Structure formats: C-alpha cells, structure tokens
Amino acid sequence: MKINVISKKLIKPITPTPQNLRKHDLSFIDMLIPIPLNLGIVLFYDPSPSSHSDSIRSRIRHLQQSLSEILPQFYPLAGRYIKKDLCIDCSDQGAEFIEAEPADEDADFNDFVSKRESGELNDLLHSKFYQVDELPTDPLLSVQVTKFKCGGLVISVSVSHRIYDACSVGTFIATWANATNPGGAHKFEIHPSFESPTLFPRRNQPYGPESGPPENGPDHPKLIVKKFSFDKDAIKTLKSNIVSKNSMNISRVRVVSAIIAKALIGMDRAKNGLSRPCMFIQAVNFRGRTVPPLPKDSCGNMLVLSPSRCMSEDETDNCGVQELVDVLGDGLEKTIADCAEMFSPSGDAHGIIMDPLISSIQKTWGTEVNFVVFSDWSKFGFYQKADFGWGKPVGAGIGATPGEKMIVMMDSKEGDGIEAWVHLNSDDMACFEQDPDIKLLTT
Image 1: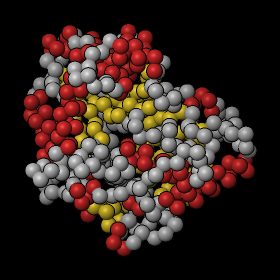
Image 2: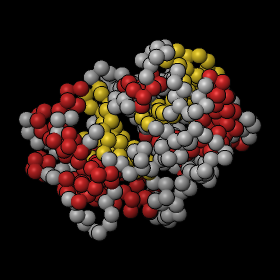
Image 3: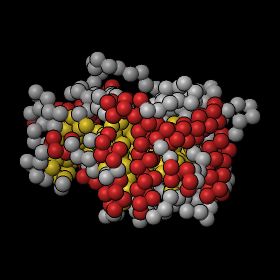
Image 4: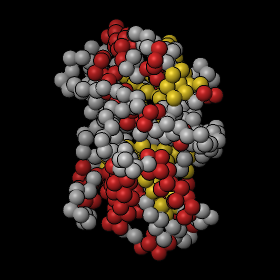
C-alpha cells in the first residue's frame, strides 16, 4: 500500500538533557548486535465515536506533546549515534514524528488489522529495519501515525536495536501511553534507567565487522514473515499432552515454540531428504533474573542468547513435542541459573553472555546444523499497556527482522494466546503451512 506523508518533524525533549548525560556509551552487549537494524512495532486503534477530522488532529497534537514530555526520561532516543566514538550524542536533536495517510483514501482499515504478513505492514513503518546509522543525522527513534478515512489510527514505532531491545521498546510505549492518557483506568509506574554501559562496559577487543542488510533480509523477495495465531484452546490442547519434568508450569511460549520447532524440523527433513542436527537459540531477557535484580524498566540491550544442546540426526528424526519442550526448557533453565550469578563476587557477566555462544559455535563448526531462533516478546505489553486514551490496540504487528528461521512470539489481544511471527523463505513457508499441527492449531 502506498502511503502519503503529510508532515514530518523532529520532536525534541521538553527540557534539555543535563550535561553529565550528554554522552551515552554503548555496552559490550550493544556491540553484539550483528548488523545495524531497527526494531519495529505497529499498533492498530479502532475508530472511536469522536473520530472526526478535528478530533484526529487533536490526538496527533497530543501525541506530539506527550512525546516531548517523556523524551527527557528517554534522552538517548532523542540523540544521534557517533560511529567513530561508539556512543550516542544526547544533545536533544530530536525524535522523528511522521503524520501519514493511505494514498488510496478508501483503503480498508479492518483489512490491515487482519494482515498476517509483516511485509504488508512495512509501509506503516517510516524507518525500515535496515535504515539506521546511514547518516550521522539519522534519528534513533521514528514514530509514524497513519490515519485512515474511517477514523482508525495506526501508531508505529521504530527504534535502533543498537541501544534498545524489544523490552525497552515496550517500556517506552507504555510510558508514552501513560503520558498521553493520564486519566486512564490502568496506570503503570514506570521509571526508565540506563545503567547498561556501566554494568556491561566495552572491552578493548573487536566484536566483528558491521555490514549492510543481509541478502535474506525482509526486503528480499524470497523472505516471508507471517503471523500464526494460537488461541487459548489450542494452547490448552498442547499443554494437556505435556508432562513437566519438575512439576513447574510450562509456559504457553514454550509449548508453542515446541510445536513450531517440530514443524520446522519436519520441513527441513522434507527439504533435504534426511534429518539434520538441530540447535535452538532463545533470546532471554535477564531483567529480574540477576541477583540483585535489575530494575524491570532498565532500558538498553539486556538480553542473552541461550543455545540449547545440539540434537543429533537420530533425535530429530524421531522427536515429538514432549522432547522439544524438554530440550527448550533445559537450555532456558541453565541460562537463567547463570544469569543469577552475573553480579556475584565470582561472577563474570561477559563470560556468562559470551561463553555459551562461543562453545556452541565451536561444537557445530563445519557441520550441517539446522538453527532455529526464538525471541519472546509476549510480556512486553504491546497490547495491554498501549492505551493512549482511545482504547487498547485491536491489532499489533512487527517490522520484519533479518534472517530465516527466526520466530518472534507476541501476546494475543485477549492476553491468553500467542501470535508467532515466523520468518522463512517462500518455498519453506509453503511447506511449513502444510504441517498438520500448524494447520490444526493456528489461525
């Protein structure tokens, strides 16, 4: 869908950033982001009874004002990245705010809410995933508000992954919604902090060269990013056949991950004519998992990649959902236990984050391994904490991220299901969609 930009401006913090906060260094975790990229979230809001043109213009002005009011709390987002110094210049250059509308004034808002492919939502994100750090004037935060003729609004937020993870984006959106809707029934106490560079300082060693967009990035014609929705009944059915090894409740994310993993293993077997070893990488948010715990509103890249053990060809040839639940759970439990030691007197945060990845690379080097990556965004409040004053979102989507066999898990609108955004090339996607369990359990 073609989008017409009506206006574009920079929104600056309502109060200047203090001099002692004008330089925000990258942490060593920030440096692990393999390529410069943006994280994108798209939120859909139904028309309200007062959705006439004057009301919408008032809402947009209010969004701009409240954004200016909260930027002093999120001062790095109003800055610019200085590549040679590996830091953010927090001199209040401003966040980008775009007002837009569909070129086709009869574009169907409800049709967009129901879109299952991320590529169809990318026009609603002003900054694509790879449009970051191209110029020293590039904003780190870009917001686009797209208004439909019916009164429906779409708010999209694009933030540089260089300094922010998805949890931080959720914290920002919740704070912005609170400021825009101060009389809302559901208020959240939010106190953002930026201690990552102090807790995880860079070391004097290379972290690998940066590169441009990968050949199989979201704009590559062969890559498809599609949403598969698992409702509470589907998840209940899955859980009824799973036995927990330690009597702990198995999360909906884990059982959905397991059924997707099973389908992807079957797809890989059909594609290659034989079973291959398989390893799962899970992104783990370690806020609240360290001792002492980091504040839940800590902003930055506060994540560790948790590799599972590598399943052999024989295991992948015969594995079921139970086995995959166990493999995924074992990897997570070890990582979570390691995170608890991160700040202990004998702890080594750098080693806890880096050593498992280095070990996995060494063990699988030179072998044909089927890698699958899971990232859980289900607890970041993109539905539940994003009421700007005209109701919670009626739909949410993501901007595509680079790489095949990447699965992003989001909460459902109802709060009891999972929306899985699966990244595959077009041939593999056609095979994945024919998996009996995926056909049976998803919409």
